[in-house]
Amino acid sequence: MFKKTVSFLASGRGSNFENIAKKIKSGEITADFGILISDKKDAKALKIADEFGMKSFFVDPKKYPSREDFDLELVSLLKKAGTDLVVAAGYMKILSPLFIKSYKNKIINIHPALLPAFPGIYSQKKALDYGVKITGCTAHFVDEGTDTGPIILQAFVPVLPDDTEDTLSARILREEHRIFPEAVNLFCKGKLKIKGRIVSIG
Ligand code: GRF
Image 1 (cartoon, rainbow, N blue to C red):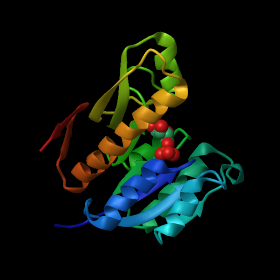
Image 2 (image 1 turned 90 degrees about the vertical axis):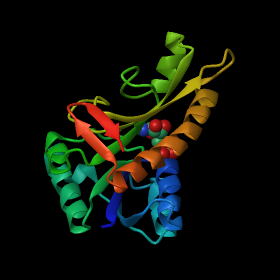
Image 3 (image 1 turned 180 degrees about the vertical axis):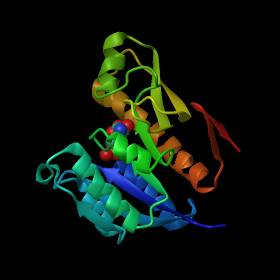
């Protein structure tokens, strides 16, 4: 089967990126490495890319007059690398409609809550403050909204009485590291079909 090329966008520590990259390297996920792009110069993800011998780019948003110009540069780098799937792994910038159109249904994100609950940032804190007893994480396709795209996989995580934002985030992260690579793998195997906002697997 034709192997998909997977590229990554990351802004921070890159644990999800590293976790997926390991599985691509070991062959657990059948895919080729594309590139990693970060909008933050000091993102740990850039160092991790080096460790995997992956081509990486820091693209400085300040150097572009608009979000669209910045995203045009990103899309051009991704296309040059032959990217079939874009994995947003802790990428903190909102993607412009131009970017989404260029990779329609080919961008996957991980969100640290059970969508549609608690979209946006600080989702773990929002879950604690709201008093929910169960939260979790969601692997989903990215559309023009904020964390509104079709849902691929979800995992639940109980909220414990003495949880802090840190302990809850750590427990959610373990589940992110389980379902995010699974979602990428399903995509790479051509097993995800999208109809409207419903994703069917298999
Ligand atoms: C994760 O909590 C993810 O859910 C959110 O950003 C964080 C990224 O963590 N989208 P890491 O950089 O992958 O370690």
